[in-house]
Each structure stands twice: as C-alpha cells, then as structure tokens.
Image 1: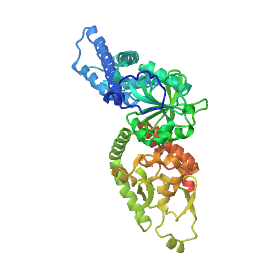
Image 2 (image 1 turned 90 degrees about the vertical axis):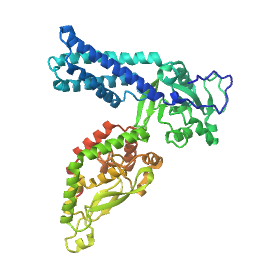
Image 3 (image 1 turned 180 degrees about the vertical axis):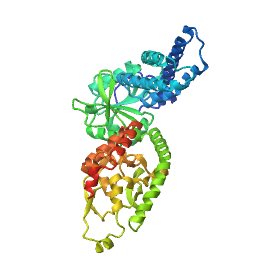
Image 4 (image 1 turned 120 degrees about the horizontal axis):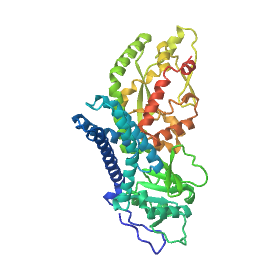
Length: 490
C-alpha cells in the first residue's frame, strides 16, 4: 500500500482511497502467516520431544510416532476457534487464547496417545514438556512474524478515522508511525469546517461533505475498519455510522470520552496508549452466517434419528388427545423482514367454543409473547400443557431450519406489530435468521421487558460465536420441564 505523503494544505478533499488486492485482504494474509508460524513452531516442538524420547535414549523412532504431525490439523482448528486469526485481538487476549488453545491441544493429544502405537510408555511426561515448550515457542514465533512483515505493504489494513480532535490526531499519528498494529489510516473524517494548526499526514474529509454528497460513500467501499472517536464527531453523524445508515464497516472501534461505553457488545481494543472498544457485528458477516448455517445443519442431521421419531410420536398423541390439525402456523418476521409462517405443534383446542359447551367453565390462560403484552389464548389441551411445559411444541421448526427459513439459535421470531419495539435495531435483526431458541428465550423471558429483549437480540447478533450457540443449547436443555413455566400455564 502506498504511504500517504504529508499534505501541505488542509481542506476537504475527494481523495482516491482505492486500495489494492493485498490491502483489501490484509486480514487473510496475516491469518495465513500466523497459521504457518503456529504450525511450524508446534511441529518443531513435536519433532523435538520425539527426538528426546527415542534417539537420545538410543532407540529408533517408531513409525507410529510420525502420526503426531497429523494432529497439527486439530491444532489449527483449535487456534482458529479460539479467535487467534481475527483482527483486533490485543496482545493480552492473544497470549491468553493461545495458552488455552495449546493446553487443550496437549490434553487431547494425551488422550489420543494411548491409541498411537509405541507411544503410550511415558508419553505424558514428554507431552508435558511439549506443552511447556509450546507456551514459549508459539508466542515467540508470532513476535518474529510481526517483526519480519510489519513494514511490508501487505501487512497493513486500511482504516478510516472518524473524529479528528486531539485524540483522533494522536491515533492517526500513532498508526502511521507504528505499522506493527496492522492498521494504517488512509483518510480521516472531521466535523469542523475550519482548518487546524497542525498539518495532517492523511487526507481529510469533512463529515458535512459526506452528508451533502452521497456519492462520497462509494469512496469507503474498500475500507472494512473504522475508528470512531465518539466525542470528536457530532452525535448525528455518529449515530448514522453505528446504526449503519450511511457508512457500513465490518469492524467499528470506538474510542469514547470519559463516560463509559453503554453498549453491552463492545470489547476492548488497544491503540497505543488509548483504549477503544470494537463494535462486534459478527452475524452481519456472510462468512460467519455460513459457518452458523453449517453448524445448524450438522446439529439437525446428527439429531434427526432422535427428533424425527419423537415428532411422529408427538403428532400421534396430539391427534389422540383432541380433534384438529397437528400443526399451528404463526406469522412472524424473518430474514430481511420477510413474513414467514412459523410451525408449532398445536397445544390448544381447535374449536374452544365447542369445548366450552360440554365442559365446566374453563380458566382463561394468558402467556406473554414479548415479555410485555399479555394476550388471551384458547384453552390449552391436556397434552398441550405438556408440550408447553417442555417447550417441545417448537420442534416442528426443525423443518424450517433445514429449509433455511430459521436457525437453531437466534433472535426469537417477532410479530409484525412487535417490530416497532426494535426501532433502529430492526435493520440489524433483519440481517439474521430467527431462531428456535436463543439468548432471550433462555433468559427467563416472560419476566423481561420488550426493550431488554431488543438488547439481548443485539448482543447475540454482535457477539455471536459457536461457543455462544453451544452455551444457549446447553441452557435450553437446562430449562426444559421448568416448574415455574408449568405454574404459569395452570
């Protein structure tokens, strides 16, 4: 990437911000280099402990010991899952995640060692030595990689700095002078219309120009990361950025004023001596949505031998319990605000008036759909109470997961009239598939307000990970047959 020369004048410009292939893919390139470094050093450690184990003791290396190197694929998967190849990870986070991933790898290796021929004897001692050497070697390898390539053009990812007061100026200067950060400012956005005393080292665009000239938005299409200095840009423009109304970035790093950041989904991000917060938008990423889709299909297909017979059994019991259809459909908002019909097992009488004439006066049952409004529903059947008590009435939605209309885990499908509760967050909700279960559903949702539901959905979308999905699945299993939920239905 070409370094921006020092400009002699400070005025709003329409600079050329197009960057080349290497700059646009700096994240992937750095991930490849770190992957090669990690695997090379880990492979060297495994070879070293094998040499210490056999040749130095006057023994030949058994052929089965070479199988150790096949576990490098497992190691890379663990490192990737730990987030060691994403952008924005601080040195402290990197060391912590690397240590945890290495520890898990050697624990798994110790478990598998009993199946590797001629490797069981005293293997744990040498694997413990390998763990210790890896804890030292892999961070060292990453540091060497940074020193070798940090000043190369392909190492720096283009970034825009929005807000150009004292803090914004210092951030720009720091990033220009410290290429090891992996970020290089190609443009700054200023709220002021008057020139400053200090000459900027990067092109400057005024916020008012972007608002007045929509065509300028195209200049930012090749930039995936932005640093927002919150107290050095006007509130209107800041809101437009955060809510993705005017410019859209994959990564937003907030450098706030002295007031704490109120967003639950922000995570620390160090820029020199300044503390910023990265605004996660994990499920907005097409790559992450693809990973999540594969995860959904894998779980559904693995559990199909259990869920399919269970669905058939429940359908038979519903027909035997009361006349009417097996399924009930509810209209909800789905992906990109499309109206979908969410399937559920029928839990109430199809003809409640007929039931009323032949039975004692029924109780009026109420359930909360959004944690706020109470709505009357027809009398619940005997078997319907069991379905609601267990949550199994959602089980037919597995069909919609396979069809791609829903996900196993995600924001709860909302009614059309509930969309007003989401306000500006509705755009974020519309980027993801609604889920059979989710963070709101496992958070005692009947007692939560609609605004809390919106915050929980935002938190999930911005902080999604496979680990979060696994946690929600675990919590879903824990609340099955919840006695409190059964009491609310009586």
